[in-house]
Image (cartoon, rainbow, N blue to C red; front, side, top):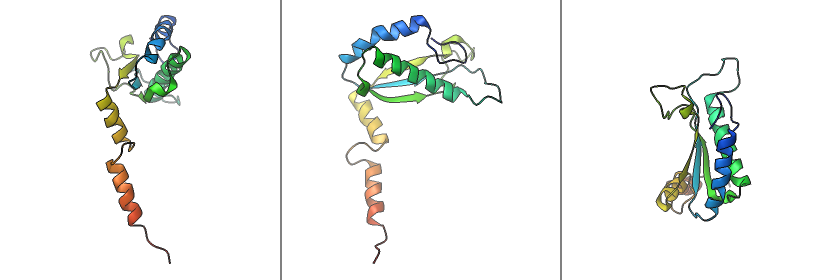
Length: 140
């Protein structure tokens, strides 16, 4: 999918994403796109990291999918996983670890994600905000 240390898609993988993009116009579920890196470390003097690289990979995949016709509102989250979820743990620098994943969220998963970020009615975050607002000092 990606060359070591880069976020440019291989031609084959870019073509694959462009071919998949129209399918997401018919899918109503939200998507989560996560980027991954192998365990090859950057030079200590570099400002790059596997966190930045994996996030750039996920963003690039999102951009290509949108260019190919996927609705922008279809994506709920784009995440960077660095080298924390290796597919080939026995060979952490393997090319298979340099990838993106596209998760199609079920309604329940999307509700859980929304609740986690305080976007659902009656969420713990909203209740805490209301309690904090109630406890604000009254200026007189």
